Length: 390
Image 1 (cartoon, helix red, strand yellow):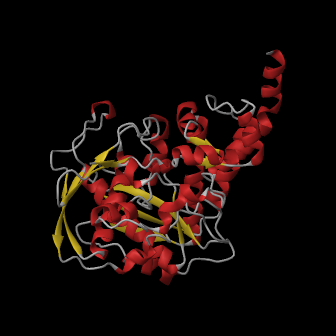
Image 2 (cartoon, rainbow, N blue to C red):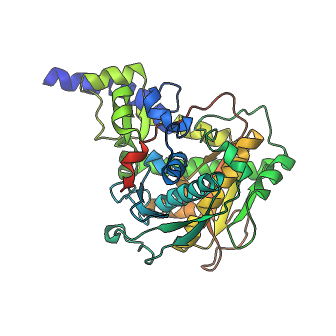
């Protein structure tokens, strides 16, 4: 037992470094078993229109790849969307805002997939009332109900649904994002009653936003309970990828070997200053430093506003895919746990000289943009049947 403990402690720095460097990149890598990423081939054998639409919608972006959706198909001619209350981020998302962003992304993808089949959608948000900000009080009330009608018109952006990726890699710093391309991207978001889209590729503004992203990432790393929330969602190796098909994938040979020996402890975070901490910090810093532009979405902050902002975000990311750009949410500064409060206030300035007032819009999404140095692999998705209530 003493020797086992010594091996764990002596190798811990190296192990943590190997583990947490991919953690910062959310484990992106072209090494997933085919079955774990089969969703990205589309619903090959599915003939039911509702299930086909869900099969596309499960590729929607969502926090920590939790896929926190429950889809009720028990009512003919309708699709009801609920929250999977076992898939919440109670530490980094204590008010449930980010989880609902994931639901809005699913909803927009679902509506687009129905329209592609000639089906129009009548969407009712919160048909039984909204969820509270107290996660422990959340119940089974629907986030949205979609009633199917004839006559849907295909959306040109649907062509990008299975090509869309969230690039958790460094962007190409030799290729600036052209101002005209940024404006084309922002124009893809409706400026009517929905969220307002903003962005910048200005050099001076980039430096300030890069610094904000990096400083807020350090807060998450240095707060044990928020760091552990990510560590506990690590999936190590092909067997776990297939068993879970969610979370943060990690497949380096060294970590897989240590996990097989029982030496990869997922119950503890690396202390500040350790090799593991430094490795994770380097990845977050690199992501911040290689941002070649930023975009953001701001709106009111009701539960419906949060869903609508997410629907706009999906469209923005699909348009970016069409334009050859990567869009990667830098969500740390928008997290609403206590230690993040100073950075939350800073991100809400976004160039405003005066302190933010209560009536001003809430920043729902802040993302770095840039050109990709190579292909970004698809990430695992749970099978459609795992989400359904029938």
